[in-house]
Length: 236
Image (cartoon, rainbow, N blue to C red; front, side):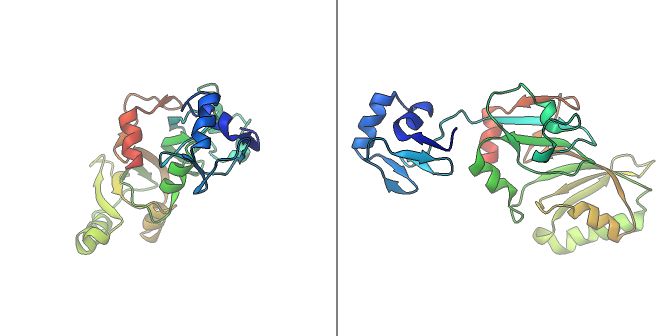
């Protein structure tokens, strides 16, 4: 969308009705921009305006929700667009709409990464105080000894609902460098900090589940559109 667009065109591009029918809706005062009913013909909508029809926000484009199984060493920041090691290269050509990742994981983090052009949803899910169930597969630089595992487990039991970590277990009981961990924290680097405090370094941080959405049957470096049921989960 350009910096401004006529309101009737905006409504039409949102798939509500034709431009002529949109004029009727505008005249009737059923369209609000930033909470104010607009009845003026030719009104120009700015890019960051919030347009409501029947109380629901509308967009002049199709909203997209794309899931990528991010490989390590790929950058998720906008400044990486065009580079070979950019996540944007991995989803190039998937849709004509511009989509951006909800999170900005570090290059060494891998696993689930959701892209969307739904700015309202992206903002909601990005808040640091948002509690979202996430499951990670971690690989540490050395074996997690039982006493340190118990320290984390005891904190879960003592803090209960206040604990940001909900579950932890060994993925491989023989190796003990691979750990499965469930958290509801949306704070960046929280897991790195927890293990650093205990004297470990996280070598690989793989997000395998996000709000119940998994990367099952999605190979590393590949992407797919979310099903409507999965989108509904995120919006709830």
